[in-house]
Length: 161
Image (cartoon, rainbow, N blue to C red):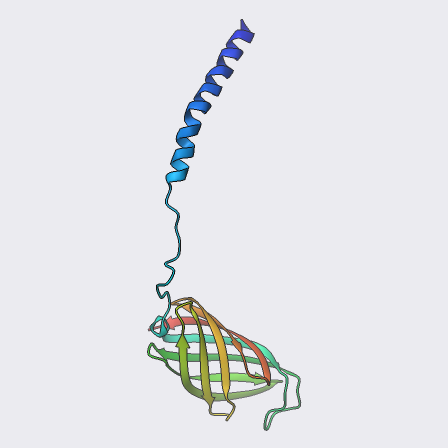
């Protein structure tokens, strides 16, 4: 008797699974597939607007005027203001091999629809800065310096409008 009940229970479970399986399979097939809007811009220069905190670290690898011989470590904190139309300005404190320096900067930035961009700065220290970046959302982006004299990565987070 016990064996008969077990057999019936198994048969009922198998029947339920077989009846439900096509329904589940059909339901799964009908679920919408989510894709990014290909061809539609996701980012633009207006994506980056407001005040941003900047933190950077790296190494100076070529001789720069009035600085120690390379290589030496570099660290930086800054406040940058991006206007949403392609202009940037700000102020920074740098540590160059133990020498603290303060300066200002201004320049331009571009943002492509794929959320990559570039930045060109003029600094009060007379050293040009060129960077490429990836936007992580309208609140942050990450940068890498593209100049041959320095290897630096920066993290940039929005702190205000």
